[in-house]
Image 1 (cartoon, rainbow, N blue to C red):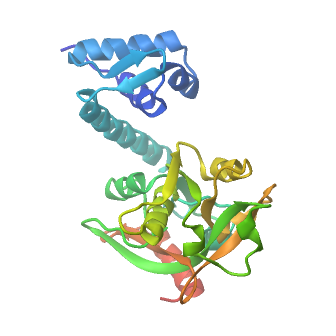
Image 2: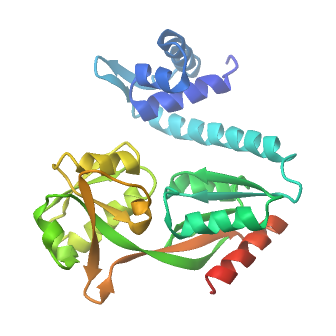
Image 3: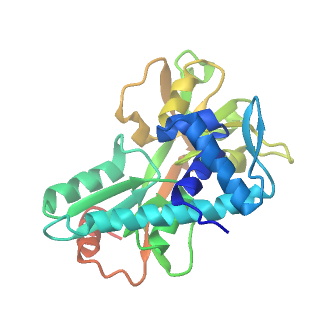
Length: 299
């Protein structure tokens, strides 16, 4: 078999995510004909049709699905190696790579990172926003030192520590009838149509909504959009959906929407966060990060 290029794997992975050769080419800043030709050459070398092509785009085939997932891991590992190599020489007092799945608009994570950058100015700090799957893969592959994510996840060799919680809010059009309620409970939201992101905290929010509002086998109406949390919140202003966010999302000014705190029977609904790291990580910069966290959020 002829040699398979890393570039071909990357083109195939991005095409799978974009479900379109034209969108994938735009994402990678290459000509569509170049990308399409490289993917076709890859299919010929493998003897497997990866995509079903149509006027609607490029749909991954069943035979192509396991190959794309393996290709994704290879591309991610190579990118992580490059990042590690590029940053070896950075930082007079070491380097720390911190992963997270929530935007740094405001909140405890932003304060913790800002505090670390101020206190340890000579440490190279690399922040990586990614999905939960990629965060844990980054920990296992040594590309990340620590990840900040909601509690309840675990893998072999990974330990965790609770750090903080953030209040949960319903994100509503500013003229929504529920915006006038003095206190908003989960059950008040049971007839609403939710929109959540497919990335970041979106899957967490989707599971949370389903867990709170599924009744007698009937699940709430949740629409998943392949876009960022910020774009999802902007869509709420169109008055077709509502969404869920943490208090950190109030760090910027939003137009035509409002944030209404959600309550459980026992008090404000909250999302709990934890730090996750490898047991055997002896990075001195990570130890200093833990010291700062312990000062601010005693465990």
